[in-house]
Length: 261
Image (spheres, rainbow, N blue to C red):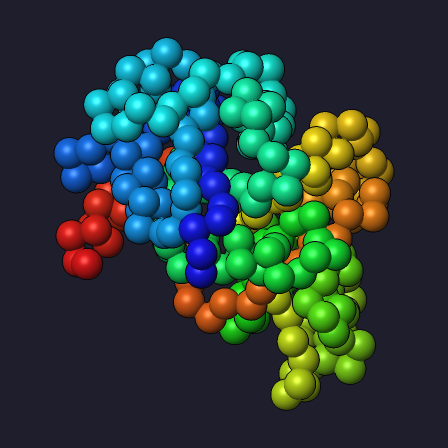
């Protein structure tokens, strides 16, 4: 695709499960550098690291000048992206991909896909990814967010629950546990992959929206967008996203994956 999109990498120092996460070393480099270098493999026209901590600024300056200080008060990466849009004075029609700083194995192809999807689907203010669920345990796992789309690929709903509910495939036991009775061959479930591309206009609109009941109930930020009528286009991929880092043990896993590749 043409280099007509930008990448922002939000990187907070504070993390309840792994403080200082962006600066944790993987194969001799801070994690944020791995994420930045993977992003460089895409065709983005500009890549900006957005942080709230001088220690991350100092570390990022060792490999790029494209790092910017943002407010420590943001509740989400989306809010941090909106501030970058304003600080950089990017056009309202800019396409901006949010690449999380704790994704050192992020796929450049996935980055380009969400940007291209947003470019081609003009009714959407955002674009994201989904992948077929092949492990039945994931269907019932509330940590695995499911997404249902319309025939054009626009998200109808995101949920931690089983959607769609296959009435003829599932049953309940005597104490209310979900059990599989039989699986229809044409039953389809999709897991949401949390990579987003935004139009500048949608980012600005997001900052004016109040949290809604659906978002609070499911603890899913993207439901605020759907609730307010902003379209989200979902592209389906069949390759897994790179292993992210949530806790200390993930650092060794990612280092091993890098060594094997």
